[in-house]
Length: 187
Image (cartoon, rainbow, N blue to C red; front, side, top):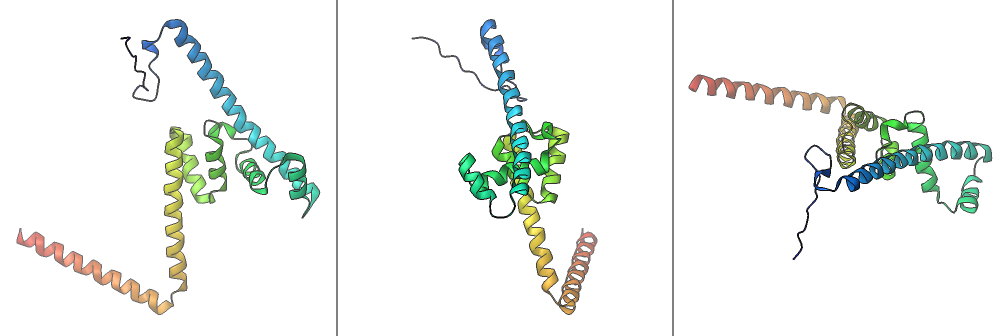
């Protein structure tokens, strides 16, 4: 029976070309560069399309854009919204997100500003893998949603209820301090 060669990613994100014949390894490296360059161009093109769609939408005015979009591109409004959101958020800075899948770029473009800023700061500092960016985006959205819920709940409370909540927190802190002191004295 013939030997099976197992190829796997190398720890740290690279691919181990060492197990391949040199001509094949060289060709695969060239292919990887070609694919990455075309993908980056695809994201740049998506932003350029979005910029054009924004201009067309403005020129056509209310009510005509959807009809034009369907007739000329066979697209839904949602498809156009993705392109336009990418254009609004990433025009002039596509290099930051050009390595991400288009779907992730669109999700990031539609994310709340606070979430987008947090994720972009990580991307700019570390350039994490696309899957990590998706996870970070989901986590940041959950945190922002929880903060928003907490703020809405607090805004609905009367001043007396907010004061009672603060008193309860203060009392709880005092109990915790007393317990820590008792435990420290008993040790």
